[in-house]
Image (tube, rainbow, N blue to C red; front, side):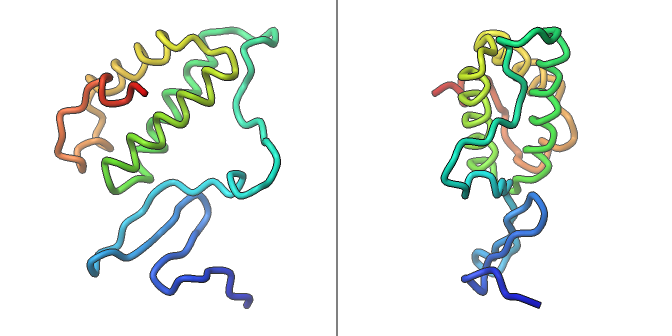
Length: 126
């Protein structure tokens, strides 16, 4: 087996970065494509001839994935901001993304309970 991590207190596994801080395990999203020195297109580009509504469902699905992966609220907010920025660059409508985010936050899915916070869309605006 080849050792691939440099730090004994952190490692990556699939799409998670797992690390120990203050003797507690924490997780956050890990995307190895960020380590590449070239751009990787990961989401649909709305310049193409694909239906609009299902593409926004991809965003909501990612919100669920991110919230389940991040054990710390600040990591969740950072990842969502990054995702919104990436999607806006791919011609998603920013106001629709924030509307979908607002719906996600007010629906209070169980994956958000761990943050013990009242989240609002304003916390995610750049």
